[in-house]
Length: 135
Picture 1 (cartoon, helix red, strand yellow):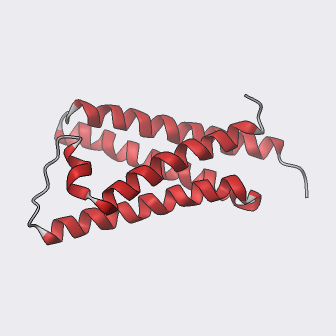
Picture 2 (tube, rainbow, N blue to C red):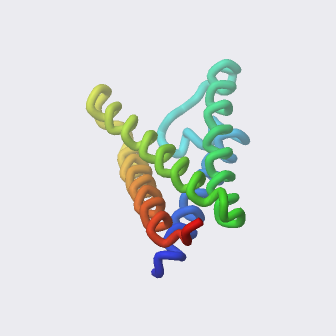
């Protein structure tokens, strides 16, 4: 994959994942979290509100990443935001593993995926900086 395609591929990957997850959480947080063995109380409006609220920034981060595909001046911002977003989630999950113990196997894989996507986005930021035209 050429260096010019690498940042776009990273933005597409990070954007699609975040949009799908963010939208799923906003639309039906109980069903989304049940796929990872987390069961939210259907009658707990405060908990559901908190879960939906967390889905909003995930959706927004995904939309920013996808916008970076089409608006060149947003590319570096979108890649950096995606890198920080995914790495932040992955590192927080690693901390939880150490403090709280090992969760459902799906959550362990999600941790690895988040760290991998974050690393890809950091590499894409570096690659796009090396290939950017001056001025």
